Image 1: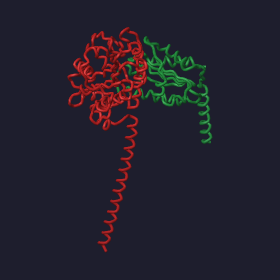
Image 2: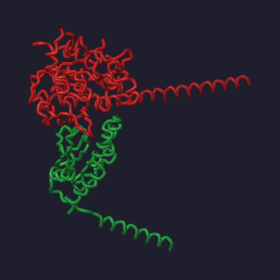
Image 3: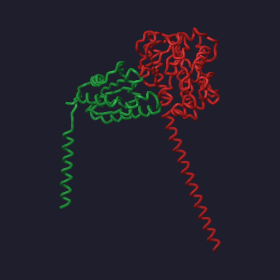
Image 4: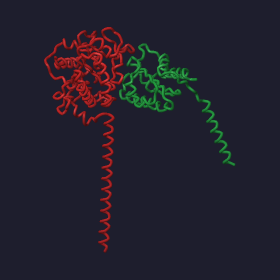
Length: 294
Length: 164
């Protein structure tokens, strides 16, 4: 009798334990479901997570990347060396990472080159070159190098009608702040205005340069994962505008070291901008990955 | 007795509050366009390189839903991109001022959030972000991203322009 009572007690305890486990499992499943929903919502808002698309874009030309060189007609592959004449015909548009083509005198004309279009402003005696990827990007003014007049980038394009243009954008505002939709919307704003202003200009979108690991630690909103992710969006844009002759120049991978960060040999020391050797490497890549001759 | 005294005191307080707020109520004209108001603002805080007016994409991008609230708008941004001076005027439809103010506050918060993400980017301009503010003047909603002094001057000018 006593042993039967004991047995019943064990049975009750075991049944209780099973119920608790089942309830806990149910709670876990509900939690996982809620987390998955939240994650999906967050991705909708901020673009893809670094786990998914950034992994795909570690090199923007990764083998699994459907917009990579094999399948993306906008991607500029290796060509013969187009020479210095080709470089001399290019107008470079961008932010401070483009502006230092001037300060390192790597273009014909050195500091007096007319090939770099970057808004530059004097502040306390120093020059501040900067251009943010934002929805008003087509309205921001540059000093048109040939005349010194202030005008927007599309206005300068309408005036000059350059044969080639290399655009490098996104490190300011784009990478740290914008999700995929906003990033592309802002970039499109400039592309649409440029194509309307100078339809025959052959536009090349250059990938955003990598940064050093020190720089990412100091500025966590700008990491190479985020840059790689944004470069996939730039590739997408080049493909989207391929019908207008827009191409993609993937210089980012050649500037990285084995850890996927900006190679110290190409950095000016701040972890964000290139030095002279870095720019020469980029220019060599551009002339050996030339725009297809018609 | 006590209850009656409390009731009387409460009634008096309510009456005072009511009259006080009636006394403060200011009416504003609403016959000016957003552009006419913003021209006044720009004259108060001139810049060597001037300002440009944003296009409609800027409104869609940063003030989603504003179209339904406003009759007209004008946003001006400094031509020098190292100067973050900026202000906007929205002439709203009747009863929509608070809703537009909320949109402006959202915009200023977003700008601040993104500003912080680029910590050392034009750091000297940071106080303007911190002093960003939005105010309602009848059927006009005005926001500024300016220095404290400029902001005070601008709101004073708008008050003088619109007050009846």
